[in-house]
Length: 475
Image 1: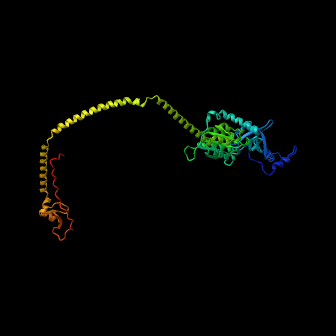
Image 2: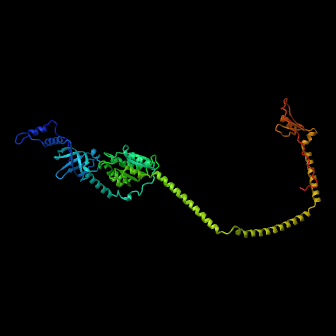
Image 3: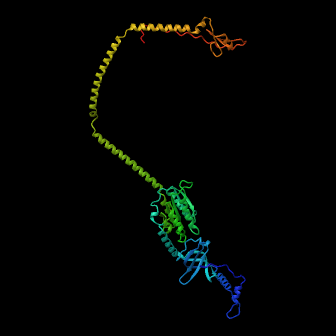
């Protein structure tokens, strides 16, 4: 593969002048190889500064540096081509041998090997036939890896997803159709991941969006989608080619969230359709697949509710009929109760005889014990106990110190209420309280002043004498 070296010739036209002066058989100075190569290079670049070449790729190879090298050929000729890293990284497809392409760039020479080559700026597949050939080759290769196997896909989509992630352009009609259809059928929370859907970088953005939805952690600030829709409107195979890129196919196949592919119209087929769990013919159809109709759900629930109530009513009616049928076979109430009533009467008779016998025994015991009672003995004991109590009362009255107060004596207390029994304690107390039969008088010992008079306390009355009981009282 050829890479051009920098120009080594001068820009003063020396090579052209020397070529013009050089003629066969004359004595003109000879050109150096570098001069001749530089002149040829300038002539080729000036004459083919911008060309479009159609041919089949051969020897396609991407170097570690990122540059892409290949050869363009047809039935009769071959020309080398090179595509630098910047342009090669923006290719919308993966160039492979055998693909017919159209290369646009400029023609230059590689003086180091006396070869000319095409420096390509843009490379596109030549026609739908070539794209379909590339499509089938990529489909066969990825299919052989198992990316399209049924075992890798979910058997069914979630019936009523709470959150739906949509990968599409935020400005096209596709997202409006999806949102409108979802709102009509069953309003659902939708998260849109905006991407380019064609052109340079579209495939990388779509793949990153699918992987981004799959990386959302459940329970985080952004809800993890229960379903992902990858959508785009219709277009040519070139317009839809981003959804045939290997990076997109692998992202959809690896996604752990159920995925619907809705790319193009019903007749459009992309490799994303093969990788997704479900293919929808249109973006609107994808919205219809994603959620049920809420009105139909409500009607179905009402139908089920009616069936449940009807079944319960039928069971209740059937149970009532069975109960009535069983009741007919039961014996009459009087027939059931008659033996029990007779047993009750017999028990009542036996109970009456037993009670009468017990009462007779009790009456006999009471009469026997009552005859043993002698009222005269009880009266003598009562008189003796009463005389004893009265004597104790008189003794208590004679020992009460307050009884002496009525005969001119006084009771002396200090400030704390304690009885003062000696003169020394009285002088030490300072203030005294003299209690008489009709009240108290405060006094001061050895001083001029006296405490304020206290309210006289009434004398304690003697307890009343116990009433005399008559002979006829027993308790």
